[in-house]
Image (cartoon, rainbow, N blue to C red; front, side, top):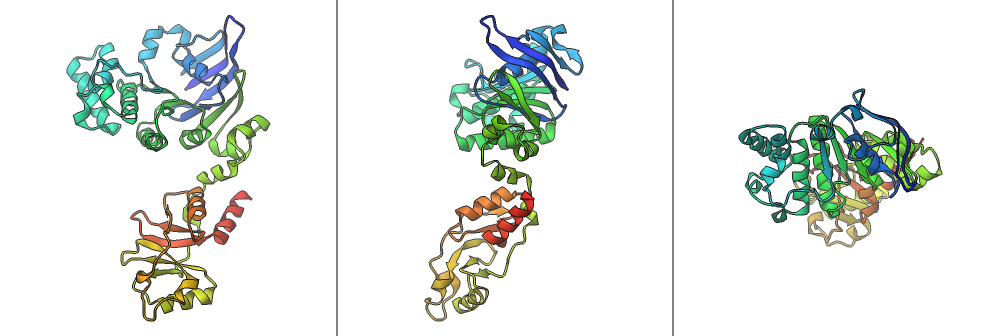
Length: 371
């Protein structure tokens, strides 16, 4: 557990970086520090490993004031991941990862064996062990940085905007990797970002800092989105916070419709009759394995050649799907908004169609959540 007790950082020129911070980071959880530039989030993180020395108050780890520990020894006991990975350019991937174990006195074979183990853990190929940082992509370098921080199995992991320098696709992949690792390792993670979406996705708790280094709100992601403490927090988390909040409600409770889902061999006349009877403007066409093929507009079914099957029609794309068992209401809403039919296609873990949800039905579910 990490505890800030009235922690403060005042620079000689009068700049207040952190002002009277009281906060407890729970063991085994991911706590995200988020806020605009100049709000003290990075300074607060660096107080933990004494890269920044507090000028007031105290920072404690498991009840012990960090000022009672040697700074170098303290830093070797805490994992640290920064933007751009900060790798040694003249060392191979394996030796970069083995850095801290070697500093702690491990023999070289043991340290390298640990490095190889961690490469697999963070999703790097064994063939990359002998490469140098410049031979890796930005995302691969960040994975090496995470592996290096984990090498000595530290209980605490500090991450200072580690994914901000990579493109959005790689960033999402690295976030997924961190969530997977944390589910297995249960480290005490302090993660700094300026991105509220990243904070909501990764954090068990989020600390929102306001300019001047004061803590504005410290809460769970769901509570932060549901009840911002003041106008600053509300503005920072965004006025679309209601949509973000849908990430915390599972899609599995949605009522899916199967009556407008037809196999590609179904006669057009049969699908047209069902669509007319139900007043449905679209039907979803699937193949023999119930994999989605596309949407057929009801007004075109009546104009199709006699005896034609649905699979012979020019279908509208079905958009992207949502996993009924694993995704959230936000994913379902996103799928519905982007669908040319205004309907979301729900699938099982194998990608087979479980049913569809209309905007009206989705709206009813969203309304119940809002209440």
